[in-house]
Image (tube, rainbow, N blue to C red; front, side, top):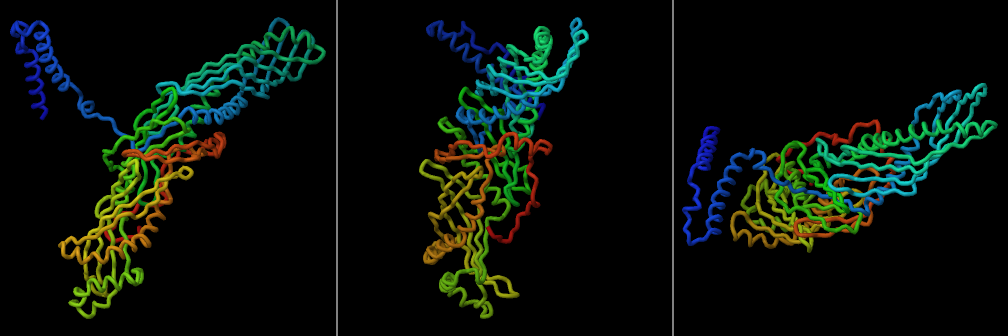
Length: 547
């Protein structure tokens, strides 16, 4: 194959170098000079395109934009809420600034400053805004920092010990946080730039030597101003690259939903930042836990979020829901068995009457055996999202048989079922939940149209069975929901779901149920949150199980 490719490249190169291009002289004069140039350039351009295609690396030729199954947009309104909580966090970090001791000598004046402590912070003007392409900019202007420290002063024969109150005014801090996805697909602060300056600083002295101290305080104030300004950026850098990243570690990347399936929320690419929004593209794919490395190709419509009125928007494509149903189908749990007393009595009587002819021809020892109904989904259900609503199409087999004790089961009928469920998708807290309702239902025989006609009388009773017995079981499972990828301590409020063609969006506001400091301290010494299994994944079983 490599030889063929090499031969193709040589042939292409020889064609490129050969004088087979139409010369300007070979074009008819009737076409005019403009026609000559156009024909020549078209021929040359086509061969140049062929050459470029041959020289392209395979990975680039096959690369394509992978559409997200889940997309999150944070708007400037949401950023304003984050700013208020983040400002509290910055204040707490600056209050814990550690300033090294300052000591020195100027003539006969010896000084030693120690035990520097921040007493008060005033941050009247702050701003947090998006900065394209991948950045967040955080500015603090005209802030003031009140300090208290211990002094030891020696001037000639005068020795004094006490405390000094100082104030740094005109504090300006400019930071830029660069956001990116890490190697596992988690959002991280990958880099930070910081500039800090202090416009002026003064210290207040008291005591009998106050005039002397004020005269000589220039050395102390200048040194303290330098040391303090040098500690602001390292403190904020640690807060961003270490502490805030530990908060982002609480966002689930690969999370187990239950004992059968999990969800992959890894980022597909770096965040896209515009002046008003930050967009995050997540894979949004459910997987069967026994085959975690298996990928389901995404052919769904890519979600498009245009709104900016709410603090946050979360969009889910049909692929998001299809992958969940595909994973459950792989796990073999989309089946249910009703046997003996679990079969409603009215339905049992109707079934025995419907298949009376078949039962009559059986061995008398089998006639009174309990009935067994096995309902099994035959293909992964499919989700369709339209502006008018969300629906799920399900195809299944229903096998009806008699199960005498100590004897093989005797099948009475095997029929195909097709149903359409309406789905109500809603958000509660950080959990996406689904409520299903049976809308359409029909059964038909896999054997003949005549048998399908005979099964018509079973349509209404079986639909009632699904509505009263099976749908509550399904909704009990879907009611548990799946977590949306948000950091711990942050929840949704005032959610509104809107359907579009091929995807749906949830617009909501944000609420901090826990402070940043509280969450960070909880996970500060803990490893990053990963999807540790609470139980081993179950292997698919051919026998019907409860949904």
